[in-house]
Length: 102
Image (tube, rainbow, N blue to C red; front, side, top):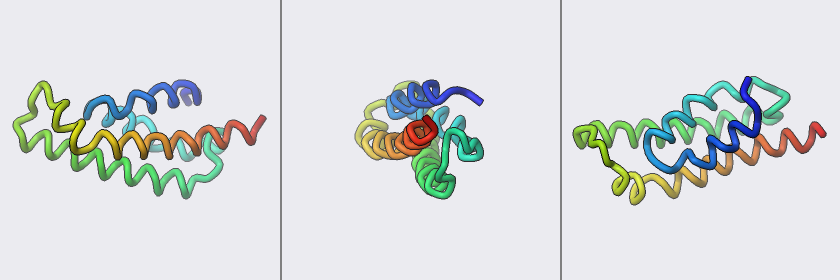
């Protein structure tokens, strides 16, 4: 399993664009199973499900617009703010697990 530092770095960059977001969502899908990193698996899965909804909507929107190479304007106006907030919520659960272990 990758380190918590890796996931924090990934999460900090996750809302940069639709591709970074899709990678973050994919790589965090099963992290809840690592009880050393995530103590509240129920909360993790609940928040992750919201990440997946944003991911599905954004990717469908991007595809509907012909998969443009530069989709940053649409991502920034329609998805980025909510994506950043959800990534932060997920990372808070990761940080809480780390601080309670030490």
